[in-house]
Amino acid sequence: MEFQAQDAIQWIGLTNEKIQANKEYLTSLDQVIGDSDHGINMSRGFQEAVNKISGESYDTASDVLKDVAMTLMSKVGGASGPLFGTLFLKLSTTFKGNDPVDYATFTSGLEEALSGVMQRGKATKGEKTLVDVWAPVVEHFKQENAFQADKILEVAKTAMENTKDLMATKGRAAYFKEKSIGHIDPGSASSYYIFEALAEAEGGY
Image (cartoon, rainbow, N blue to C red; front, side, top):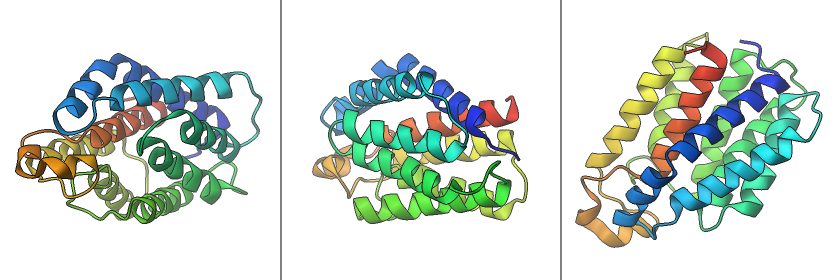
């Protein structure tokens, strides 16, 4: 794996395409167990992130992801901005000084991202949040020693679908208690699109 600035730009571009294509779906998920604005917020945030990085020249993936993080933090409303911004900021920090980013460093970046978002959201696994997608993907990366696009896609999709059976105990969805069971967590769905885009960008999936 040799992850460079151009790969990071492609990753964010593909993520944005998937978020835009599924904006209404993400909002429909949030209408049931949230405040109905997840799709709108993520759509605006990733479009702004693409606008930002499209107009710049970058030498490293770290610099690309830092701008993505800052844009998401400032443009995405509610809890999603700080949480998704933290994920990309931790990746950027870990990647700094590593160009190209190899598999081991990418894995460390994902670990730091997960740790950072758990700390910021005071969340852990099993609470029906985006952590329930990021944690198993990080575990997959740690168990392997090379990038496997098809496996990442499989792990992320299964993890997203598994949030349907969980009762939310964190965030806005926690107000719905038992009624949250049977619905996919919106943040987990967005996280799935992020990893689906990574699989495409890095694996040609």
